Amino acid sequence: MKSYRSWTTGETIVMEGEPLPFVGSVVSGCATLTRSMEDGRTQMVGLLMPSDFVGRPGRTTAAYEVVAATDLVLCQFRRDAFEEMMAETPNVSQRLLEMSLDELDAARDWMLVLGRKTAREKVATLLANVLRRAPTDQRPLRAELPLTRDAMATYLGLTIETVSRQISALRKAEIIRLEGNRTVLCDDYGALLTEAGDDDDGDGLY
Amino acid sequence: MKSYRSWTTGETIVMEGEPLPFVGSVVSGCATLTRSMEDGRTQMVGLLMPSDFVGRPGRTTAAYEVVAATDLVLCQFRRDAFEEMMAETPNVSQRLLEMSLDELDAARDWMLVLGRKTAREKVATLLANVLRRAPTDQRPLRAELPLTRDAMATYLGLTIETVSRQISALRKAEIIRLEGNRTVLCDDYGALLTEAGDDDDGDGLY
DNA sequence: CGTTGGGTTGATATATGTCAAAGAGCGTGG
DNA sequence: CCACGCTCTTTGACATATATCAACCCAACG
Image (tube, rainbow over all chains, first blue to last red; front, top):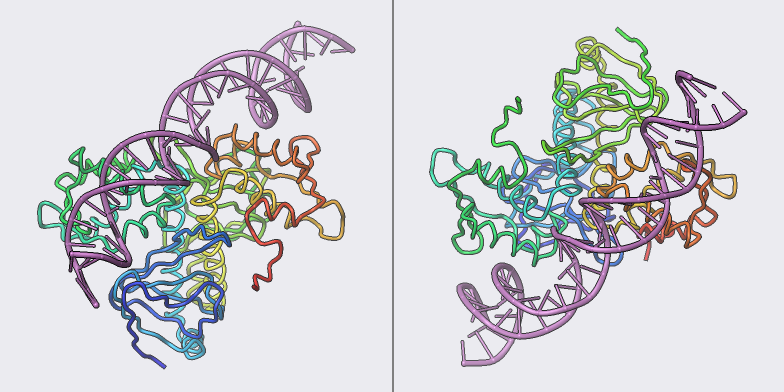
């Protein structure tokens, strides 16, 4: 009932509306959830990182397209077996509730980004999120972007060109530096958060 | 442990970050969830209708501001009592999981609206959503808007003016009609869905 | 070497925001 | 009853952020 499976960068794991006979969780790598309109406009609605859950108990079709953003390994469970397990062990569904609520909060936070932030703030927000997972003991902060410019644009509700321009602008403003196209460095994380339109720190007191 | 409480239109139920000592569900009326930036930009991240759940088990502070959009009645439970109940009766947490996943899907659908739809499509999408709950046996479809133009703008990631203009445009295109400011009529729901950028019907087959 | 896919940059178009004025509904108090 | 002052809404003129279209760069790879 439990198995592992791998995908390589760019491979589609499931298409929107297709039957999804399993649930699972990300072991390594990174996947994108996207929703599309008939004319091709698409919006990323989630970014799955290791330990994130894939699929929905109680639904047999995928509501979103899932694509491997990097090489990816998933740990899969057959749906029926998993649902049995949920029914038997309340801890599982409690934990799943916890995770769903976290994802709901994340989705709603992202709604603020999509609805109200400027292009520069959007890009800064994304970079700040990526850098947040970087090892905190090293300066400068350094992180590998798991997304292409195109994927970033899809995530941020922008075009590739705008993403590229804003990254250049942040670089020129010396908020960030780049090594190649995929690694970001940041000497002043507070400055980056300011560009993102967020507080410099999380305490939120006034 | 269970009690009812009422609010009138416009009243704040909880502020962002404030302690929230209860959970509950909407009995009647309609409330908005909003998230804000320090400079005042705000985005609605959820619209609570009757039977929707308020609050989050396991968290003691509100992540969003909750405001009564209309006169509102809530059925409240003390948090500790509710969490006890959840621990004892697995059905409760299963049901709650179900509801959270539905809300997560709704939030993600809305991300597509915020990130990729034009102003006209956004407004049409909102009106279509409101009209979907109207009695289906009557023509034309008729529904009362639970939101002011300002609340719609906050929901759609637009300004009041743009919302107003787009409503006028849809009226001039004879996609919708208005009675006063708050009731929408629609003779051709399919046309409205087309304006919303959605399929004319839900079957989604090609 | 050519080709390809991702990325950058520039010129221009356009959708939406901003600022400003005025209309419509509605309760309140004289 | 009417005038007044609200708030919500509509509409117009103009500004601007972002999309669009196009060219080019660069590294990887056959």
